[in-house]
Amino acid sequence: MTLVLPKSPSFRLDGKRALVTGASRGIGMGAAVALADAGAHVVLVARSADALAELVVAIQAAGGSAEACELDVTDTQAVNALVNEQPVFDILVNNAGINRPGPMSSMSEQDFDAVMNLNVRAAYFVAQAVAVRMQANPPGASSITRSIINTSSQMGHVGGVDRTVYCASKHAIEGISKAMAIELGPYNIRVNTVCPTFIKTPLTESTLADPERVDWILSKIKLPRLGEITDVMGPVVFLASDASGLITGSSLMVDGGWTAG
Image (cartoon, rainbow, N blue to C red):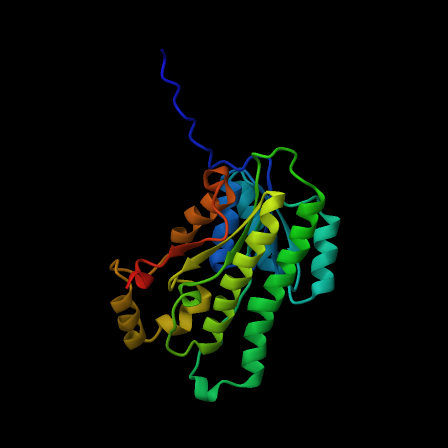
């Protein structure tokens, strides 16, 4: 009898459509490039039209497929219009976010509202818009799943210095993602979070400019270095692909062991 070997699931995303928010820089840009490299057509969303246009040109020059849509994701009406005028997405990387670091004792209402409005409210309604279209347009085969990836953080699992509001927003994303996974599972829609540590991006630039804070960060990360954008690109492709076909309601830690203890 000939042994029949199991076929390894593919990490390829050929023929799939992906929406990436906050795509003009940092982790969002890395996610967009990674998805395009894996074969997806990527719709890039951010408020910076010039940065998006430059990224589209670079992705296309590298052989990928991409288009740009200037959009403020806090504008729910505009989000719904974009999602409804596009063909249904197979993948969402719900990445737009900000941080307003500072001591809890001096955090203003304006800073609180800005972080929660983008990191939680906007992320929720972007996911809602995409999920509604996914539900109404099933992929056609029970073995095919669609994927929503919410960008969370290690700070969605622990606390951090000067990050009370940011931690609150990312803990909320973790809870939202688990509940979404339960509701959307019957529709073959998977929902997971990717949880990076401190990655060298514009968002962390001010923190990483403080040598004492960098020393504290490195004392927490078990691997002896800070994170790079490339460290998040592979996990995003994994969660988007059939290789993670039975993974939903989970958090993929990209934290160098920070939360290990």
